[in-house]
Structure formats: C-alpha cells, structure tokens
Image 1 (cartoon, helix red, strand yellow):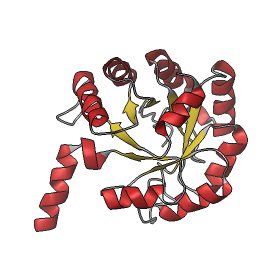
Image 2 (cartoon, one colour):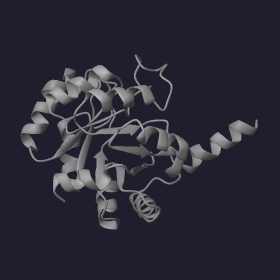
Image 3 (cartoon, helix red, strand yellow):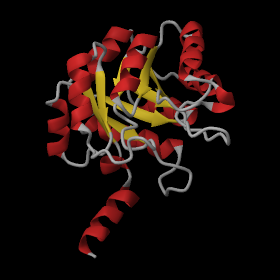
Length: 228
C-alpha cells in the first residue's frame, strides 16, 4: 500500500492492538494472527502489533494496515518501544506499514537522544511512515518538527512525568488535534465504546484499543476486581 492509502484506510476508524507478552497465555504469532483476523471481521481498520514474528504473521492473515513496533528492554534505558535501529530494521523487514517508536524525551539505549535516532531511521527508510508514541504535548511538537508522520498519545500516563494523567487523555488528544498538523492517533486507556467515540470526537485521525479487546487475562482481572 502507498502511504496515503494507508492513512486513508485508517481514518476515523478503530485500530486494534493485537499483542501478548511472553508471560501471557495467548502469546504466539499464530494466535495473534487469528486475533487480527477476528478484529478485521469485527470492523477494525488497522492492527497494531509487536515483534517481527507477529507482524509477519498478521500481514499474511489480513490485508489491513499494520502499525508495527518491537518491545525490547535494554539495561541502560527506560525506552522499550522500538528503542534502537536494530528494532526498526526488524520491523521494516517484517513488512509493517507504519513504524511506531517511543518518542518521549527519555534517553535511549547507549545514551542516544530521539533527534539522532530518528535522523538515522528517516535517512535509512525515507519512504516509511513513522509514528511517534508520546506522553505529553511538548513531545508531540518535537516529533512533528523532526518529521514524524503520525503522533500517538500512547505513552501518556506511562512516563514518570505523566503518571498522574487521567486516561483516556482526552485533553492531550484535543490539544494535538487543534495545534498539530500531522494525523493524531488516540491511544491509551480506552476501555468502552463510549470512550472510543469520545476519543474520535476530539478530532484525532484514528484510535487504538488494545487491552479491552485482545487481552482476556486483563479483562477478567478487571471484572474480578470490580466484584471484590
């Protein structure tokens, strides 16, 4: 798909995040590919997926745009969403349509800052769409200046300086939609259809829902906690 086609396909729709960590019962590329197919049949316009293996399997199973990321932890950094060029290379090889990377102001592995990292990524993959996973408005402004193609509210509430933000972060969504020119992806803490509709009503380009749809262990915990 051409980049503009990718963006138009996800516009005003629901992107379903199909991810399962190593310690989760549904972990595995085959299961995530089936989850993506179920999401497509339910009306999803795109998929967000973690790891080259899952991305490759999902691309074979569905013809939806895939936002790819690669979660890898390094001992010298808090950044774990596509933290280095090694992860960018792996995602691109797997066929992701959009590359999602942590775009917070935290230092990356080996002491690298976002500006240097993204300059290398853009030079190597000039025709790829890149999504900035941000936690606050200032990070989004910088991401737009650096040349990211999309900006997400993904990390709001997950950095030390935004941990008290109420999710979904409608305020950040609204401010981005009003003041930033690139497409905005609402993500983080969307648990209900009503919250999804409220997020889209802020003027964002599209919205991602993950845990509430594709992580039954966490969904079950939420129900159990409510009745305790």
